[in-house]
Image 1 (cartoon, one colour):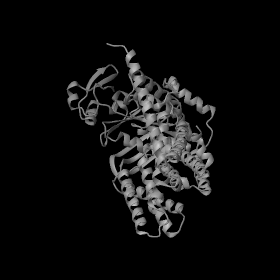
Image 2: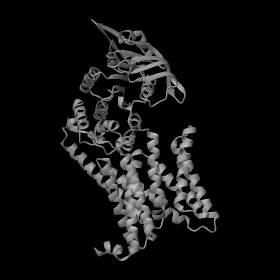
Image 3: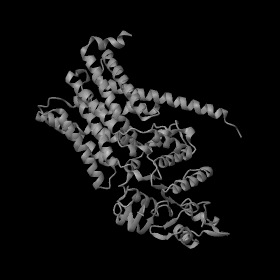
Image 4: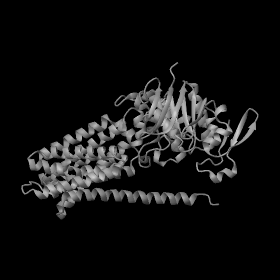
Length: 269
Length: 285
């Protein structure tokens, strides 16, 4: 089976300067990968490199057995931030999601009924069907995030790269997101998520803990330990055992030193 | 009422000006829509002025001004790309440097020449009232070229406007399509400078598309509104110029900018009233 993603001694960064080095990863179809770390730890840089938006600095990286960016129809990417033009862009929600089908039809190929059906289904899966004709710029930040997630789903890609996908989502939307990711994995897609939400990361098959370098990589149970998380986040997390799992909680007295928005984050490991 | 139409019916030069102006307005609204959405107004401005030394050089050598303008625009785009890529300077610094450099060079060339057939005012403001049939044909060609570009590359240009990274992911490199967009702007500038001038073509790139952005819900509607507002500006500007003996090209652009502020004010008042209404029915406590 060709791995969806395979890296060997990979270094990623900007302008020739590495942000993270010595990355060895393999992701198979239907598997989920979580990249965990504080801001600036290299999560987004790695995701962008997998997406083909950045050149690897050194080492090897294969996406679907080829160089990153060689299979645009098979990769979908949700960035952490979106272009400033969105505040101005006169585009309806449905049109934004429909753009996910452009790559399949090329420059002038007609969009099919199936394309439109996928778009409608994606809108419904994110529970934003009623917003379909609303201008994107009229939506709240959380609603816009759902539109971007619908765009990713509508691409029907084999590899979903999601950078902080739950940022701005409320609790209900968060649960819906977790369910959608399970559905995507069930259909055989692979998912790589950059997050600093430990609970979200714990659902993955493989977790990579980053802090400018790879601190640990492997199964969540082995990686998301109190000691390694303290190393990655620079603060101690309280471990509260609950039968078959452990809750990881940022302690109150750590908040004074928290520079990375980790307030009240809970995690299971 | 007759005074709104008769100047165009009774004076062939006004008819030609109106047709050429509307062709400029429509092609500029197509390219201008993407310029506004991508936030490339400064580069558009620089491009419009960067053609000046090219035009001056061509006229001095006896070559067509259009050719010189194309060379000037090419140098401008190439220079901005080079400085941005090879230095740590931001693109607006690179654009600013080339902008003043090219403009200064153009003025130097014009001031040195005693045999210069045009003048700086003519290049900057054009001669919309002196439009010939061949100018109209040239404008029509520009409109067709820009229109075909916009249709064929609509999807990458839309994705570029939405998010350049999404265009890259889709296999449509944002850099390449941004250059294509600049090529569209160049066609507008180069083919229109004789009609409305380099300064005013920039106004037609921004003002109608900007006005369209205030009211449109879709990108194509923004273009259509831009074309409508642009054409309206041409008609009203020419009329103002005719009846009050004012500079025609400048009148057109002033009307286009004024229309923007009229629509902007109406929008602001409507939004403020809507907010007040929402506030008055909101539960208190």
